[in-house]
Image (cartoon, rainbow, N blue to C red; front, side, top):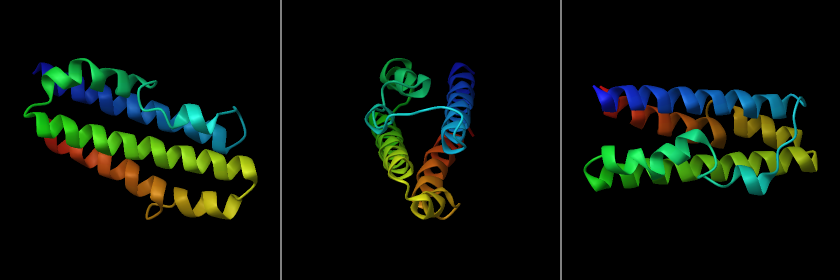
Length: 117
């Protein structure tokens, strides 16, 4: 039960971060690509480094989730850098469901949902 609740919260945190990211894409807030690229600053990343390491067993599961999460932040950082440079076509391609951001986000969420089930 506790793991299911923690994963639900982690998924909600990821969704909230994506909303924050959309605010940047829509020009409502500023983001820095270097900060966005750090996977330990968001709520999900902090959970992953603490409770997640203890709860996501075997260790390979935690390592896989950590890798997917790091890749998500790497791609998000790339999108932020493109937007700042004015590469709006590149941003739109990355944000498409089959683009780098969409695929990285989906891979992370699908893996978390499989653990929850």
